[in-house]
Length: 246
Picture 1 (spheres, rainbow, N blue to C red):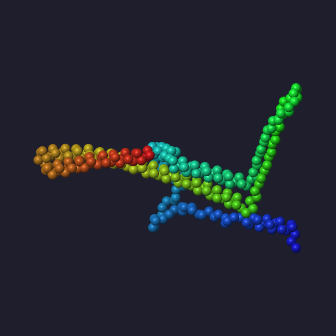
Picture 2 (cartoon, one colour):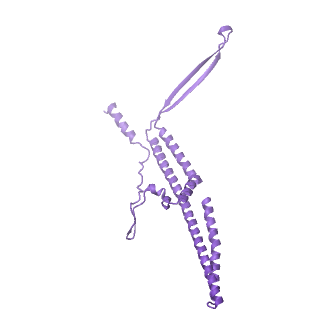
């Protein structure tokens, strides 16, 4: 015959094993220290802290300022930050289920004593109450909700980091394109000045009889081609600048 003293520990073990669902196993998504392409071994992977500010390696104060402005003002980043705050609130709500719930109430009542003379008037009475409730997590539902809230919080934090990195990458890429186009414009203008000087020399040589009309035509066509490239490059530069502004 089983005594009551032996039933209680057995019941506790049974209830402890009645958790809802399997335990969550976090996947191993760590990146390797190095990676190889064929027989070539690359350098070690970047530190996550350095990766979050990778654009600072260009040592360009203007780029740093543009990225900071974009991250602070972009609506996608703000939405991701709002989702993170929501996930934190949900985690706090899930954690509160482990503790007792307390509620307080109070009331005030005023009554007229009636009569006349010194004893006339009114009286007030006050009442207050305090109650507590605690739900025992027998089957582990609250624990699973808390684990789910933790996972949701981690996902929201990772989504915010990814959104920030994506925005920084878009700004940095557009900024680099803008700088590259500006360099092309500078080179084209220097080439144009050199080609115009060469065309002038070719015309002088033609007058002196040391060059043909074909040489003059080629020099003039080269100047015209370079001149036509500059407005197109300037348009691309304005488009990149507008993209950064947006």
